[in-house]
Image (cartoon, helix red, strand yellow):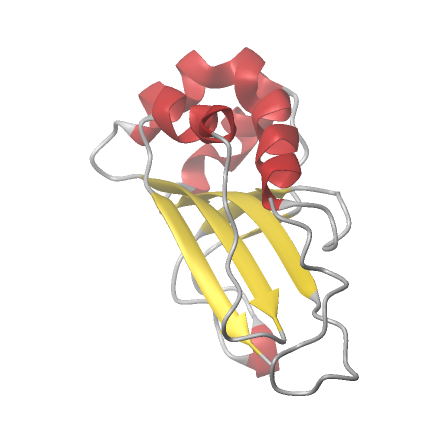
Length: 146
């Protein structure tokens, strides 16, 4: 990734460009498998809930969700977040790939990119995408400029 983190923002020359990244393995529509996922992999989810449980603002969650999120700080490059996630799930790739292949399960790798510079971007090393290829799941990216 190019180091534009300290360069001035084109919009406000006195303000430094800020970046924030995250990477999350999301397993949806598999609430009856939450315990199995944890028992088989030994992974502790960052968050999990079942459809109908009370969620944000007291409203029930519409879908099931089990997530594992990188514990790195947002300032760490996206490559590092994806590599952290891959290191956690790599020993369980066969199990997770089989789970992702089931018709009633949705799984993806969800990445967040936040910046105060609408003209900036990011790059990824090909090796950081190993998790997506190995699990045969989509990569979703949310981009937020503030």
